[in-house]
Length: 262
Ligand code: ATR
Image (tube, rainbow, N blue to C red; front, side):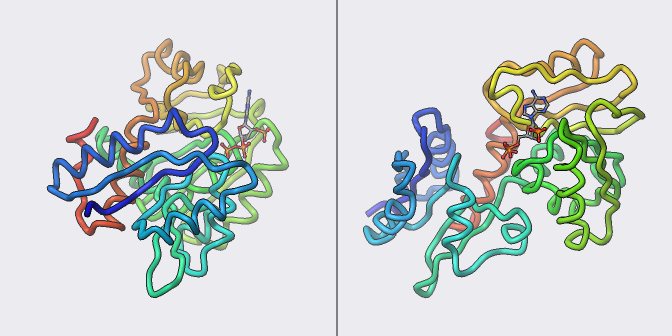
C-alpha cells in the first residue's frame, strides 16, 4: 500500500501541496498518496490523531493550525522551537515529532535564484509568525544583519528581543515601517498585506537590490513597486516548493532538486 500523507488546514481547497508531493514522488520513484484534509476550527488535534491512527506517515500543517501543531508535539527540532510553529508532523517511537520547514524553504528558494545571502544586508517587512519562522534559517545561511520593519514598531521590537539569544551570531534590529530608510541587498515581504488585498507602501528613502514576496498567489503591491524600480523580484512559489521538498526529505529520506519544480 502507498505511504499516506496529508495537508491539514482550514480552508484547504487552495493547497498545492498534494500536487507538489505527487510530483516529487514521481521524480524519486516513491509510492505515496497525499491528500487535503479540512479540519474544523476546533478539531485540529482529533484530525491529527485520526490520521496517524490510520497508519498515516506524515502531515503538513497550514493556516490556522501551525501554533496548535507546535503545542501538540513532544519532540521538536531547534528551528521549530524558535519558530514556535510547526508545518511538518510525523510519529516516531510513539511520539509526535514536529519541524518547521518554511524558513529553509525560503533560503533554498533564494539560493535557487542565485541571490547571495552570505553577509547580505537584509530587510524583512512584517513581525508576525511568518517573520519569526524564517530568521533562524536565514542566519544559519550566513546572514549577519537583519532589520525587521513593522507597521506596529512594538511588535518588531518584541520579536527582536525574543529572537536575539537564538541567533547570537547575527545583529537583529527593529524599525517602524514609516521610518524605514537606507540601502539593502534584499527585502523580504513577510506581511500579510497582499493576502488581505492591502497595499504596502515602501518609502522612497528605502532602496534595495532584490525583492522576495513570501505570500504566494495574490497580486502584491510590494512586487509591483519592485518591478517599477526595476529590481529583480520573486513571488513565493519557490518558497512553497522549498518547504515541501524539506518535508518530503524528512519523511522519505530523499531530497528532490528544487530547480526541477520551479
Ligand atoms: P503571519 O503569521 O502571516 O505573519 P500575523 O502574525 O497576523 O500573520 O502578522 C501579519 C504581519 O503583516 C504583521 O507584521 C502586520 O503588521 P502589524 O503588526 O502592524 O499588524 C503586517 N501587515 C498586515 N497588513 C499590513 C499592511 N497593510 N501594511 C503593513 N503591514 C501589514
